[in-house]
Length: 277
Image 1 (cartoon, one colour):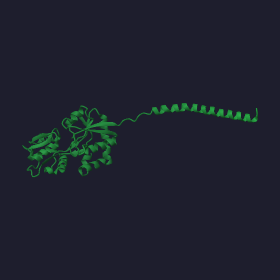
Image 2 (image 1 turned 120 degrees about the vertical axis):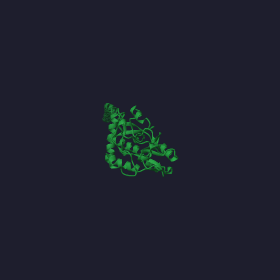
Image 3 (image 1 turned 60 degrees about the vertical axis):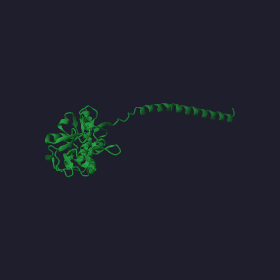
């Protein structure tokens, strides 16, 4: 065999050995790729955030009402959304009638109710309440120029209330008024403007807001406040986790100063000290 042929043969054997080595290398890498796939498959999906269904009667400005776009807005709505963000849950609002709202909550239609609800011993028999978040009192609205100057003047007079509210209960138990009950307080205010009743009785901040928004009604709020009431978020008694999350979020919102900002947005003033207990 000539030297040139030997060199050619040697070169061919070298090339062949490189090809075999390359094929062998590729074959040994395949199992490594296969062992990586199961690791990705075993990653657990992120746990869904707690979702809380919140019942509200959106007929109670400025706490909850339906705006021109059809959205439910108000002080309570902003506060609950802030609480939800702070506590790491999602709030879903359901606009419902006030009459029977606590029964619906107790039966599990909602997880919670936030609707300017006063904390009372009677309501505590069927639902739990969060820590208080608002201090309010009942007030009296009349037409401009009315001879009525306070509740001492309402005996025998037709006074409108929202059915089933603490205003309805207090007025019925403490005066001789001819109590006229309406599904919504806005209906009572319209009846007052029309002359169908002599006064309207409900939470003073609500009366003030309605009159501010509708000056054409010709109504005024009398200066005296007749009760001292604390609002709380009502929670189904079987939802201890919901109550804990709401209280934790409410405490965080108050501590951060966000509560004060929301209050000032809707009422044009800083909250009284007693409301931030």
